[in-house]
Amino acid sequence: MGVRFIRIAVVYLLIGACVGLGMGMSQQFALAPVHAHLLLLGWASMALAGLIYHWHPTAGATRLARIHFWVHNLALPVFMVSLGLLLTGTEAAMPFVAGAATFMLVGLALFAANVIMNVKAA
Image 1 (cartoon, rainbow, N blue to C red):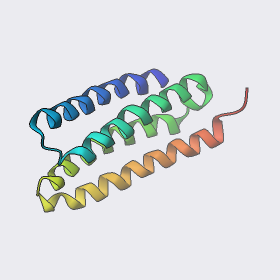
Image 2 (image 1 turned 180 degrees about the vertical axis):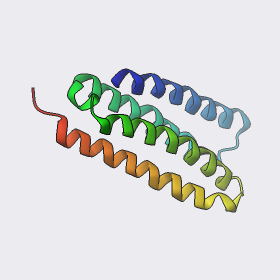
Image 3 (image 1 turned 135 degrees about the vertical axis):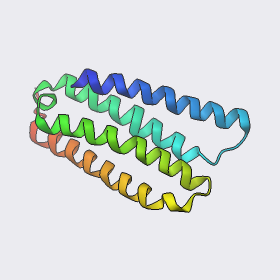
Image 4 (image 1 turned 90 degrees about the horizontal axis):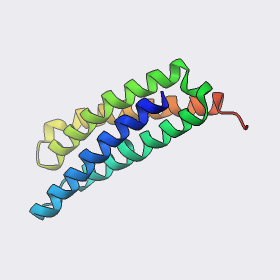
């Protein structure tokens, strides 16, 4: 599970970097929150989760880890696309932003519960 998280994290790193490069080249920074969320929820959070699951394979082998992976990777793209639409003027995207952000929080809560229950001191 750790490797799956790390591999997808680098995909989000590249996407976030491309969004940042695009904003810089165009000097249009409306998508700065999307850029930041891609790098924090996509790259940083998923890479750290991957490392934790790698270092604590008991936690990585749980059903919670698998559910966390899928919830995170289903919520984040919807969250980022709908947030991008909202930030560029599509007010109808707000329910999708709220729903995806809530679903993302559920995934993060699953990760927290998994760590609390299954990560033990060596």
